[in-house]
Each structure stands twice: as structure tokens, then as C-alpha cells.
Image (cartoon, rainbow, N blue to C red; front, side, top):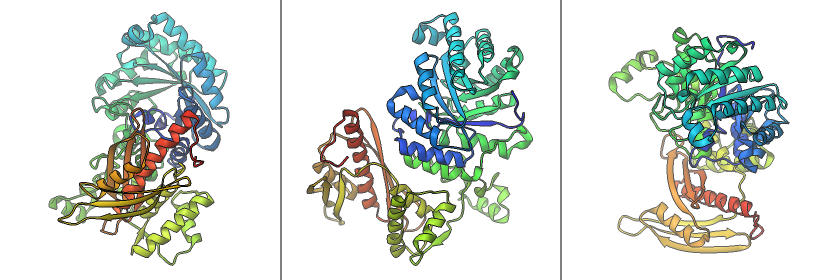
Length: 518
């Protein structure tokens, strides 16, 4: 297979494996938003979903395949089952560069306890799945699930057979994050030396982070001949997550002396991509997270600050600008017009519909009247807040909150639900608690608040307060987010957005449409 031996293919599975993180599910519009940003990041392969998993996943893969053009390949996951492969092939029909990624477990523990199949049966199933996938597209990838715990002789036999059947990429997963860098690198080296037709395929790796070694294992695999990495933005994924894309890419870029490998990733888009995925999934990035954490380029110790002032290279091995972190940049003011606002958003990579642009511009003008300086981060928060696609089943019409040193925090709220208006008041242990208790009095749906996070978008007391909440109906988790200058108002809007998602998707699943609002 022809490929630059020093270039690493980046396969992003944020929309598939990343979305399998508890509470990280995305609707179709959110998946499209992330897919567009992944295209700007210049990802080589976007794994858009698992088409047979649900009608929603099928539709998401179909939409991403038809709308993301001129760049990445679009992949759909399929078990080594005819129905899965057929469903993936159908979903990928509109893709310019489709890829079917099929898999079956090869470790004895999976064969015995999950598949209840013999090694011979699994080998036959793997070959048949690859051949069937080739009927839909030329680009087929095969993964022997739990490869790192598989018998090496059997694993080599499976890899040789699927390459012979037409797999152009063979992905070696450390499915449960069990391996270590030395061991995993040796596994890739063994495949390189023992599989006679290995030069006809790209060796890929997919590492999980159960022992915190996903990135280290991935880099070790690259040193031993792997040339595709499967990873996610912010390292999200099942259990402890996947190898973090930003860490792999920046390790290769920062240490060319050690790896002599490169990617085509536009690293200046990393921070924006990280923030988008965090906002959409509600999974907050820890402050000390490598590359994209809030403290990644912060320096507090006096000796560090002195060194940074003298020469940034004393304590920074990469520049903030190289991953898209920029100084807060004043771009617009209260006298700026709609055209200038639209142009700035386009420069930042946003292409909004007329309706979304109108709403975002109104919010910008409101903000500019109240806030002295408007930064790019403020614009990002506004756009994120105004471009969600869930209908407002419950709409906030009035909010009044009272708090004092000696008194009890209290809230009075009026909500609109279709043609009905409700209002209530309640006290709580704090302003946000009183708001949520008041809303709960007017909402009929069973729900529970499971997470609440607030962050200041920029510095200063006039910063936009961005609030992310998660609510559960007992079976699913729904994320809401909102950004305003008032933390209490942001909290109310984020809570209502999460509840609106809960109601909307419950009604969509049952086919009910209540009050004419959905």
C-alpha cells in the first residue's frame, strides 16, 4: 500500500468511541458540528458512528458522509456480521471517501465468554466480513478486538488472512488498556516481522487509557512500525477514555528528533476543537490536562515566571499559538455592524444559518452594551449558546432572584410551555439552588440533576459565565449549556435546555408530540 513512511494517518473516533463515554451522547446536528471542525483540523479519517446501533446513529453517519466533502475519509463501524456491514455500506453511500471498519474479538477470553466461538469460526467470520465490506467500498479496515490479550500466533494468522481478503488497514486495539509501552511496541514489531503480507496494509493502533498508558502505548507502536493512530479529542471514550489526539500529535511535532514522524493536522485548531467537544458533550477538561488544559501554559511559581519573561523556551516546550491559544483579542464593539460580525465569525471558522446568525448578532449587541471589551472567546460562547437545535418546550419568560447575608435565597420564575404559562417561587440554599427548585415545581417530567459546572470564559468580573449541566431520566443523560454575563441566568438557561432535550428525545422515542411545541 503506497504511503509516505514518515507520515502518520490520524483516525479520529470522537463521534463513535468518544460518544460512548457515559453522558457524552450527541444529537445529529451536534455530530455534524464536530465533524465540520474535525475537517478543519484536517483529520485523515473520521469514524462517524456505528450505523447498526440505532436509527439515530445510522442517520448521523449518513449525514456526516454526505456533508463532509473534500477532505477526510468517513468511516462506519460494523461487527463481522452481514447485517452490520450492509448497514454501514448503506450509511456511507454519500461519502466521497467511504471506509468500512469491521471487527471481531480474537482473545481467548472473548471467544469463550462473549462470542462462544472457536478460533476457526472467528477467522472465517473475519475474512467473510472483509470480503463483504469490499463489495461496498475499496477502503476496508479490520480490527481484531482485544488484540493485546490474544495469542500471538493466532493473531498473526488472522491479520494475514484479512489482508489477503482485502483489508487495507489492520488496526491492533488495546481494547481494555491492559498493555504497557514496551510490550505493545513489541507486539507491533512481531506483526511486522511475522506476517508475510503485512507490507500490503497500514498497521493502525487503538489504545485505551485504563492504566493511563494510552498515549505512551500509541507512541511506542509508532516507533515499531504502526502508521495510523486511532484517538479522540480530549481523550474521551469508554471507561478511562482513549488516547488523546492532541497529545499524540503534539508529541510528534515537539520531538521530531525522537520520532522523525509527522501528521497533517492543523495544530492551531486543536484548542478550539477541544473546547467544542467539551461544550457539546459536557465533559469538562481538567485544568492540568496536557496541551488543552487551562493550566497547560500557565506559570505561577516566581522562578518560572522569571524564566518565561526572559525566554519562553525556559519553561514552554511548545508555544500556545501552536495549538491555537491566542491572547484575548478585541475584535468588535457596540458600534460594529452585522456584516463585520458575520465576517469575524467566518474568520473564526463559523458558517451560520441566517436564523442562527440573527440570534447570535442580537446576543452580541446586548453583550457589547454591557461589557467594555468583547473577545473572540466571548463570540465563541455566544455562537455555542445560540446554535443548539432542540426546540424550547419550556421557555424562560421571567426570572427574579433575591439573596442577602441574613435572608434565604429565593427565586420567582415564569415559564411558557406551548400556549400555557406557569409561574412559581421557591427558596433554596443558594441562588442557583432556589432557581432549580422553582423550575422543578413547574416541570412534570421525572429528572435528576447529575452534574453542574460553571466557568468564566474570559478574565474579569464582566466575563461571560458559561454553565454546563447534565440531567438524567434514569436511563439517559442530557446535557445543557448556556453562556450569559449572569451566572444565575446561565444556570437557569442551561438547566432548561437539558430538560428540553430530555422531553424532546423522550417524545421522539415514543412518537408523542405534546402541546404542539415539538
